[in-house]
Image (cartoon, rainbow, N blue to C red; front, top):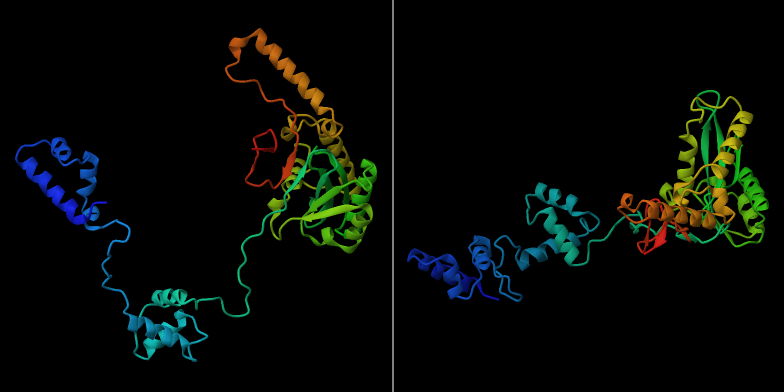
Length: 355
């Protein structure tokens, strides 16, 4: 590296040569310098700063002396100031007619001395925990569930929709509408879903939020008896249960949804029965290559997607001039992740796949 003094001397030589009529590029070449290097050196800040590692740095004029630094720490060690932060110490010193350094200097010196730590009974802030990560490669491996409100006949009165969805196939495997939230109702919905899917003692994980019905003793006892493992979202983090949240949105934003409310519990149950049947057997889900959840749950999606692939290839063969890009991806999705890590990507709307 060239020192600032040598840079200044080189710039002076080039300036003198230019006054004598030499071209800038030729003058720089004579000294073995690139034109861009000369332009960078002519900036005042570059000429004055020595960027070499280990270069001697000038001591800032406003730096506290060693005596002043020791005085700051000595004041902080005094019994009357030992439990106070610099924000309290500096104003009190000012009231006594004493000024040594600013609050930021107090904080900086305390950090350098490893004496700036959280005080009081408050817990030390903890880094955010990782969300639960689950993967499903077949039906009935991972279920997610939640409870949502359905508007009742009058304002402020709600019914409660219990909904369980299979992570792999997106099929609604269990649901019910009740007039209240309870762990007993949740246990009944889960029990009926397990019996309907015939997966008793089958390795299964049930993911839920942290609400009280999700952690009630009745539900936990039922899950233990059925051999179901539990998984929970992080506290106050609804994004850890995205599939259930997305299903609620699909339900409440469909055109037939009675936004004005349900007249009775029986009406809410009847409407949900029609919605679940249409969602499972008619609706083509974008996240599973536009097959129905029931088709994917039954393992029929591979044959359906293979047929679509053949159809598209035949269409391109008939009119290749109409296809500027590759064929649409109709490959079956082999695995679905809940809260994928950085090593997992989510192409839209193909689903979740590893990099």
